Amino acid sequence: MTTLHIKNGRIIDPATGRDETADLFIEDGKIVATLPTEAETVVDATGLWVVPGLIDAHVHLREPGFEHKETIESGTAAAAAGGFTQVVAMPNTNPTADNARVIAMVMEKARRLKGTRVIQSCAITKDRKGISTLDYAEIIKQTGVSIFTDDGDGVEDDALMEKAVQELAPLNAVISQHSEYATISKKAAIHQGDVSESIKVVGQPIDSEDAMVRRDIALAEKYGARIHVSHISSATAIDAVRDAKAKGLSVTAEVTPHHLQLTDEAVLEAGTIAKVAPPLRPGRHMDACRHALADGTIDIIATDHAPHTMTDKAGTIDKAAFGMVGLEIAVPIILDLVRQKVISPMRMIDAMSWRPAKLFDLVGGTLAPGSVADVTVINPQRPHVIDPRTFKSKGINTPFAGFEAPGKAVMTIVAGNVIYSDLA
Ligand SMILES: [Zn+2]
Figure 1 (cartoon, rainbow, N blue to C red):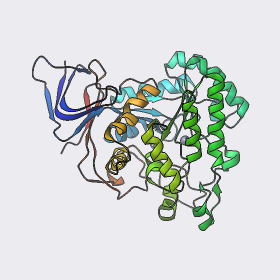
Figure 2: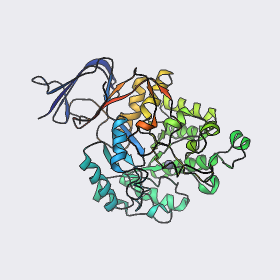
Figure 3: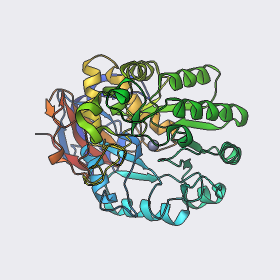
C-alpha cells in the first residue's frame, strides 16, 4: 500500500471544471478523496499546479529500427521529464507498426520500464506504403489499440483511404491523418511563400494540407468516422475543421507547440533545424492556430516529437530530415502562451490531458476520485531557459534552444509512482 499526499497545490481539473487550492491524495495507484492516516510521502505543492497527467498523442519513439535517433527508454525518459504520463507512438518504425507483434513488443517494453505509459498506434496501410489496407478488426482484437495513422505520410490514394475509413468507422477507431498530398507538396522543405522565394528554396503549396483535410472531412461525413487531423498548420484547413464541427461531424485536430510559436521566418535563422512537416508557415497561420486552440476548433496540443541525429539534420535544407523534438519543451513553450494570455491554464490542461484522453479513449485525464493516479505537477513561475544539453531525449534538434520560458513540469506521477521529480 503506497500513499501520497500533495499539499496545497492549485488543482486544475478540466474534466470537472475544478480550479482551486486544495490537497490531492493518492492510494494504491488511484486518486482518493482522503486518506485514513498520514501519507507515506507528503509533497508541498504551494504555488504549483497539480493537474491530471499530461498526454502527448503524437510522438516518434523510433524503436524498433532507428534506435540511434531515440529508444523507448530515452523517449519515455524525455516524456517523464517533460511532464507526460502517457504518449501515443507513431508507427513509422522499422519494421513498421502495422501488426500486432510489433505493437505488442513496443508496449510490453514500455511497460517493463514502469515510466510514462506508451500506446503504440497502428499504420493505416501495409508498411505505410499507401497501397493496401490491413485487417483492422483483428489488430484491435489482439492489441486493444484502435488508433490508426500512416504518420510521416498522408494516405494519398483517395479510393484506398475511402476503403480504410469504411472499414475503420464501424470499429469506432480513431483515424489520425498526416494531411499531406506528396504529389502536391513534393516533400519540399519549407512553406511556399515570401520566405521560400527570398531564399530561393522550393516551397510546398499549402493546398497539399488543405486538400487532404477536405477529403477526409468528406469521408467522416459519409461514413460517420472519427477523423483526427494531425499537426494542423493551415488557416484554411482550420476553417474546414471549424465547419465540420459545426455540422456535428466527429472531426478533431491537434496543433504542435512549434506551430503555435514559430513562423516560416524561423528557417532564416535556424536553417534545417526549423525544417518540419508540415512546414512552419507565415504569421497569419500561426495566429489562426492560436485562435483555434483557444476556441476549441483545435482540440488538443501534441508535440510531434521527432528526434533525429545532428547528421540527419545536417546538409542542405532540401536534404535534411523533417522534424524537431518536443517532449521536453512543450510545457515551457505552452506556459509562455498562457503568460501571453493566448489560452487559460484550464484550457492548457484541457488540451494536454483531458481532451486527448477522451479523444483517443485513454486512461487518465482527470483527478476525480477513483481515477488512475496519473498526475503532473507544474511550476508556472520558475523561469526556465531551454537547454538541449539537459535533454533526456537523444534528439537535441530544436530551434527553441535559449528560449526563456516562465516555468516547467516539476513532477510526473504514473499510477501513483513518482517517475520524475525536479521540485528544487
Ligand atoms: Zn506527421
